[in-house]
Image (cartoon, rainbow, N blue to C red; front, side, top):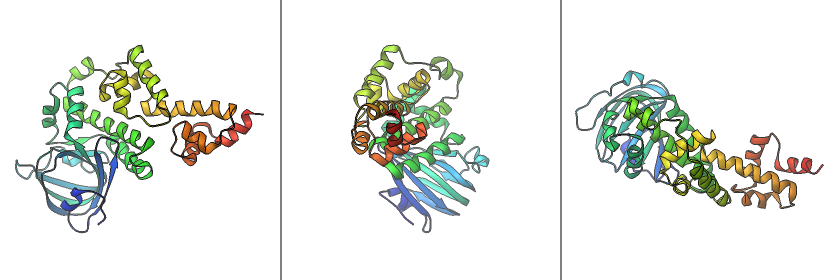
Length: 302
């Protein structure tokens, strides 16, 4: 068994494979757990946990103080993206049959509370609707897997931190939407809600001013005068891109001008426009344009 900075690794049975990484800037951790049949008691933890199935065929039983039961919809816990939410401050007895490969988010209570106050009519109380069920959505597995890979490359710095914040916000927003389960969500706070021109201008100007260092989602949202969860949804509705994608595209546009008009070495140029190093700059630039910065500079000068 392998583990990094994770108390949860102590709650799994011997022989399980466990790895933990930090994601984003809000204190979220993501744990990869691979195991077969087991039963274990997980002590009370101060975070919510959300376990997302990646692969395997297993049947989970769980006791969070209401007896050992199978969560409703557990027959779906054989499909990628099935998830089980466990409340914070709750000791949990798990009994799982079959092979199981999952990613587990540990989510600080304050972060969850802010999301659910923003997206639901009952706030954190609406979580009661999720704790007894298996929640199904393939997007959970897609986001979790992407964050797992990204955290190995970039960790808590630079683009890795921003990427993590965006991914966690999307996971929580989707959970809040599932918890609300009512037409009022679409009517009162629809996905097509857009930023006002003034808010959009403040957000984009702030990102331009911080291009050389990576602003967090919370900081960008504050510049727009909104909570980060409302801002993330409204920004994408307004621009067709997440703030992270917008900032990445702006960096490439900025690089075009500097490559054409200056002789700044590529290593320094990469840092000036907000990439962590020349290699990262080259990889992103190639994905965006189909060519390298050096090749683009040469062609732009005839």
